[in-house]
Length: 198
Image (cartoon, rainbow, N blue to C red; front, side, top):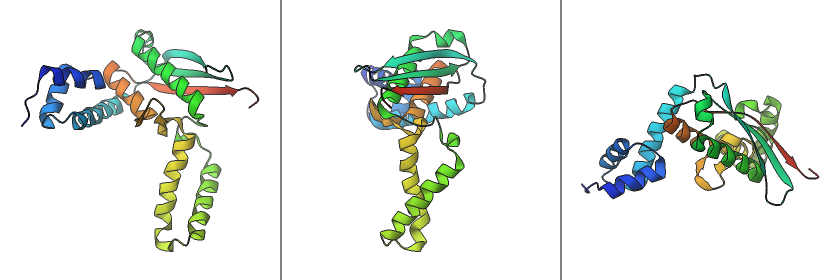
């Protein structure tokens, strides 16, 4: 088993924002493998975030982001449980990062449950017809359609999109990691994206 050094713990803490002891335990659990330790902490963070998801998020802030070419702007409502957390640098940075992401990635909805059912059904029928036209066997059509729908959700749902600064994380992961660090539920209320001539 690899020796777990203080430098390794510090590096993992810098990468994840997790506590020192959590970082040490994750490194011990993975035999010193940094990437696997990040995954362990993310999974634990997601578990912590799930516990907090039922708590009301009535505070927060509205942030604006204007893209450098002044042709795209975003207003984002990001909510948390307390005004104290809303004023933290980490929460404000999360809000700015999400607003910038919206400007660049142009999502249509916050989450899958906001997509009208008729839009989902229409998209599924198109993907089914495409798969049939490609000569795919009937037995695997459902699986193919589900795989392609995941790509569709990724293109239109903010929470499903890979973060533009780090595509190894989805926006939902980014939020859940911040929930784990700040200890409060965080939700995206709504957003509006404006594009000149759009």
